[in-house]
Image (cartoon, rainbow, N blue to C red; front, side, top):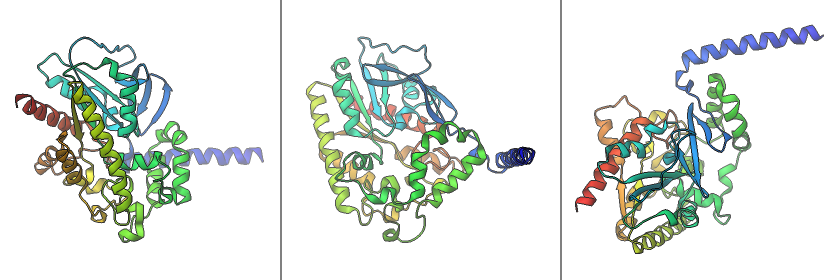
Length: 355
């Protein structure tokens, strides 16, 4: 009996290795390392990229390596605050938009970036008030990296807004509950990443009308885009957001600091990126264009902003085969996407300074 089970296990390993080899040949887009887990307080792995962090009080900064020390000197500074985009998900430290921006500068300003995965505006600026504010100086520039999933992040942390449709299927719960284990162990395998990719599709309603799909029609962008059936809740969440933004803008301006909202795109807005929309998110299920909506809100409240979408779409006009986001990821720009964001920041800041 023991010999029988040993032989069966041996055949299983051989079969798995063969299938893994075939997956690496035929599904090359899954060969990148989609690994993300804590090793220690300095070091994580994200899509095969080693990422290191340094803490100042309770605020985390991504740094080049574990030897890197942040120099909080007397020069004025650009402070970039955001979520996984500013964290540089999937790109090397040197390829993050703020490091690319730093290389373009011809002044003595420092460049610092503090971020955390799944941050929204409220928890980003609670860190600022609790920790960073003491390090800010007059004429510093604070740039908040907005994300179109910020609005749904408000819903996640506020129980009055939580929606059962977010986790209305057992497979989604299983996927969410096993994230850490899968990212740490299973995602070394192209085959298993391929299977997880299709499991995440099977767990959601990718076909049907907007009303039938409900929150699956726009996923994390449901509330930012006022998806059909979610208009009232969307407005309430946006009201929470703009109230916080106005308050922060007023407080920073009173301290003679500049506050700017940075608006990166999602792939759904960018030309020729439909092939990475694996969950078939449909902007046709929105009732309001979120980008136009936030820009109008910021203009009406005289809050500075930088819109990066034109840079992405201008690039794609002459590069139809290129991708500016990670494969099957509608939210996180790759290295070239970060370069375009840095270009948008540099050019817009120069214009504002000249004015």
